[in-house]
Amino acid sequence: MLGFFKKKKPTPNKKQRGVSADLGILVFENTSDVIQAENALKQAGWSVRVMGPPPSIQTGCDLVIEFPLIEELNILRELDNANVSPLKVVPVTAPLLEPVSLFQTKDFGEYLMVRAANMKITIGKKDMKIVNVSGGGCPDVPYLAQEMIGKTLTEAPRPRDLGHTLCGYALELAYEELLRK
Amino acid sequence: MIGIVGTVPDLQLPLIHGKARLVDNHFEIKGRSLAINRGTPALIGAALKASECVHCPETYAFLVGDTGKGDGSRKLYDFLTQHLHEFDFKVLTFHYLQPDVDWHNKVLFAAESMQKRPILIADAGFMYAAKMSGQSESYDFFTPDAGELAFLADELAPHPFYTRGFILHPNDNVPDLIRRAYQHQNAARYLLVKGESDYIVHKSQVVQKVDQPSFEAMEAIGGTGDTLTGLLSVLCGADFELTDAAVLSAGANRWSGHYADPSPATQVIELIEKIPQALVKVLNEHNGKNDNER
Image 1 (cartoon, rainbow over the protein chains, first blue to last red):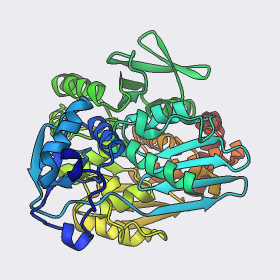
Image 2: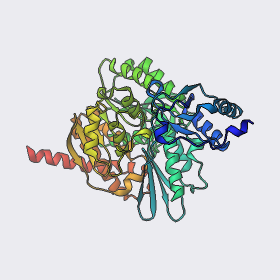
Image 3: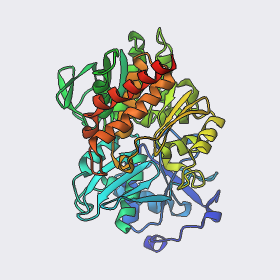
């Protein structure tokens, strides 16, 4: 019966989403937990979105997960199974910040660079090897660069698996955009 | 001394602080040898290379291992809060650190309580926290790239990841973004905006643009912003007037690219090796210009 409620419940459109009383946010201790929770929920078929927290709970490098409040119990159970529990669940009372959705692509001839927010990733077109990662300011950026450069897009670890910050998340978006190219 | 605060992507590295010195392609600090790669080590590498050419106080670094969870950054913040007043720096540069507004405020308070207030430079994650805290104007320099400038210009964004689309326009309108950043008090006294053209800004006025030599590939090379901030730290520490320090840093960073003949696959260490050659060139031109003006 519980399964009837879950799986790909349509996300309300932007106009509905704004300050809708039927949405809540899951607040976690750090961005790594958010990424882990998002992975678990999406793998289980939930339709959730990562968003920016409202100003009252911002600390500096935050993501929250927006979800339909009616699914709270099911979602918390899913997260409990994945061993990643939120610090709190808060109803959405004000519009949330949207993650960047614009990408810029620069073609250097032999190389292709994609930028998402403050993060850029560049690959060689022939061998699909990652040759550079630039931009960003959070401490996982040099770590991600160290782990990804010199590997092909398919060999390299995904930023969402190794990253812990919003810069890491932005790099994941740039990486996904490269995969779509 | 100039002080540099940042992280290294190695969880085995405890909090260390001490004078840094170049040894071949590494730098040594407190008996440890660290590779010069992107991030704060690139900034330190560039600063040490630049110090070979100008009379600059020694470089003192505060480093800790952090791969993004922020534990190392918080240890470092805690240390600085308690001990910064024991140091005397001409310049203090904050770099790759986990953005955290509460800790930022404590560290800024500690810096401002030093016996002699240093020139304060914020880049990377610490610049994000400085902007979010609403205390950007306490800094002497921010060194954003175009994407980060858009973040400074967006009064609502707590991180570049949330910069609103109408501000993060594909054809970044740099002067407009600069105006907007100052309008909302989200810029330092000086900005050194790095990009296709580098903009040097003082109190909302663009005082100089540096756009030669120009290499498109530089944008793709991770660490070119770090080297620019390293150069800026050294030249501020070497008693150059702050606008001159910014202009010379921008020029030297570009010429280091020229001498490295960059492609999008070039690694930042290749540029750092060229810094002495590049800095000598821009300093000679600067001195020649000053002689002609006399």
